[in-house]
Amino acid sequence: MSVIQPIRITPSLLDADLARLAEQVAAVEAAGVEGLHLDVMDGHFVPNLSLGVPVVASLARHTKLLLDAHLMVTDPRKYAPLFADAGAGSITFHIETTQQPRELIKELRQLDVRVGVALNPGTPAEDVLEIVDQVDVVLVMTVWPGFGGQKLIPECLKKIETLAEQMRPEQWLQVDGGVNVETVPQVVAAGANTLVMGSAIFGQADPAAALRELRRVAGGVRRGTEQPA
Ligand code: DX5
Ligand code: ZN
Image 1 (cartoon, helix red, strand yellow):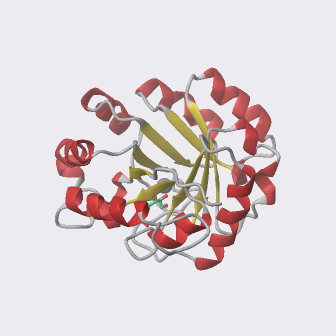
Image 2 (cartoon, rainbow, N blue to C red):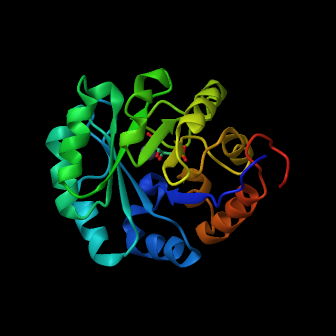
Image 3 (cartoon, rainbow, N blue to C red):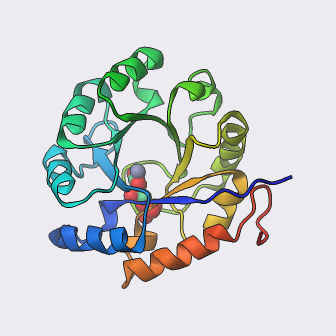
């Protein structure tokens, strides 16, 4: 029997018009989303730079939405407290950055934030299975991190299925990279319950309308099948 759960959407601001950030955030907030996904890059773990602590601090003053910081940084232990202080309510580190994930999770818990772990496309599900029950979020990257607007790597779908079998319904199984109106059915059918989307929302002329359409498509898919519920 398949269980139908509401799908959460956390738009990624990477593809937003950053000169109109407050306006773009207000548009998706009014349309209804479960959080704002903030892609933090250090130019080392990934070959790019993006948003930093001051942007998160400014956003926290303008929105009540959960600020979901995706730390694509080599040293999450060093930077997580800064993002928590700035107002991030959820902090996700990459499993590839640490040999001691349990210790890091404990430290992040001290910051009083939701804690997530992310996996690159080349990292197997097995690398996080032992800690899955200790986090609030597992973020499966379906593109190599660093840039928005890439195509979803279909080989990552199996990993979503494997993780979905191990996770509780209230945990976020979040998928990030190349998720759009065409690929939403595949990732939801595989078991994702939380979708990060950048270009599929902010790359569109009307982000709120795009969001409504994406929610409609996501809501029509049953887990285990790409057919409408
Ligand atoms: C990529 C980031 C993503 C990115 C997604 O490194 O982690 O969150 O913004 O962008 P789209 O949805 O355009 O693939
Ligand atoms: Zn991301």
